[in-house]
Image (tube, rainbow, N blue to C red):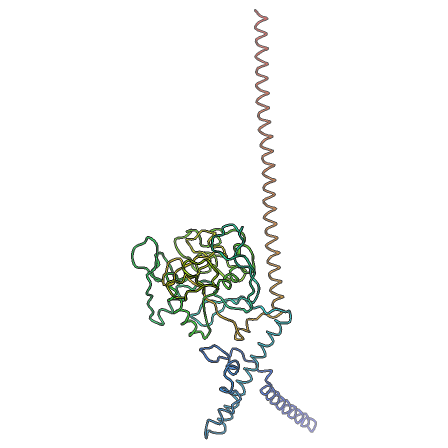
Length: 455
């Protein structure tokens, strides 16, 4: 019995030690900031920044340690003050964890010498457009004198360096996105939309052809575009704008130096051009370029931030009129649903007088990139995986192309064989026919000789 009692006492002691150990472990976990990692802390809804980033932007105004709040709470209960202190410590810990995560991503990206961003689309707010980040880089702009389809007034071919990344709309601003702005502000457009020979009053809600919410918004003037951009910037806390010509070309070309991102030519299966449809199409209907953007060729001409004097063919950098005035010829890029293929070339330019609107011109927006976008940075390992995926896709495409070419060759060879066989059969048939005719002729001669002998 004594032995049994001893075993009970030993078991009880072990249980108590285990429980004490669990308590100590939990206390350690609570105190260890590296274990508690919280992400996506919401800060100022207008700026969309995390609490840690707000502290950087407004030093001294926000204190996450709880001391400032504790001093201003007055004679609150001690337990309540401790609870608020712990909450403050948790917020500071979360902010530090978020910072550490961003620092790690940035450091990992810099290890291989270049910061690149994911090209997955994202939104800055529920009503905001899908955006894609363009990493810094070099682009071809303009066109050479011998580029097929080149038009007067295009910029000369050169290389341009994009020093800072920026985000740009995945597609042109849609009817749904513009409708959200109109409803939120009870906004009314004032510009009559030019729709060609059609009669009546037309605007963005009635552009002269069928549209749904997915279609690119058209029939908007620069006044409407600016009002929308101001609303979007205020709603998202990010500064939106129209792209410059160089920014637009960088995003549209997607690293290529050909007239179109798809190559030297463009057809109606690749873009909404040359009146292949009577009006716009839903955004993203056609193939996307290598940067994940759609409709940079065709669908709707896109406004840029540059304008030229009434009779100028100089660079937008030398433009003199104030933007928004009737003398500003606003540069538009990309071609529209009614434009021929050569006008959809990336170097091509056309112009729209500020204060006017038409049913083949829309717009796409851009914004800057800052540390609030660090979670979209690709680390070195992610870039390596992406490069492998691209290489695999290219290899597969090459194999598919090789198989297609082989099939064509086989078909061609089979066709040649079939033609040869047909020729042989035709020759044999002709020979048989000729032989039969010769035999018939010989038989006729023999018969004639017999008749002569009888006489």
